[in-house]
Length: 242
Figure: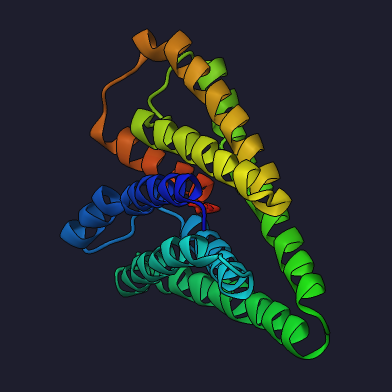
């Protein structure tokens, strides 16, 4: 692997790790209160699926070690978050809903992709293309999901539901992995992270415009962290999404 590409990949790994650990304050609150309150498990279930798919992509593609390692870390962190969510679920229906989501997406869908690409598709290039397409599509969806919160910010003229550091690290995450993909000539990694970099820039501009209207509220900050986690893959592609 080219030294420049390796260094950029390491930087991308560091940023993606920061994105993956960003929900820790939210879960510290959940553990202290022994309740998930009104938080939703869906962002963490989706981020786990994203991490698993990119981990599989990184392990399948030659020289995909840096993509695999950071998403392996992401998968471990999301699994911990989901387990804590199950332990401290506010009510039985929340626990059942989370189990169903995990069974459908993280076990069912990922298992289907893994089995299909392993046993039904011949040729490494074709396998990489199919896994990459699925990863890219999911990543674009996850990077675009915070746009709903942007509409809320514009309507309320308040950034209380838009945590700055998470938005900032998602912006950096998209930019560094898009650069990595450009040097590595990886279109599946490049397109979603390029889009994530662009959307992250829009989010930061919106934040700058409305930051003086921010209402300082601990509860709002925690809710914002939870709502924006879906934009986490990071490695979340990478991505932190890679």
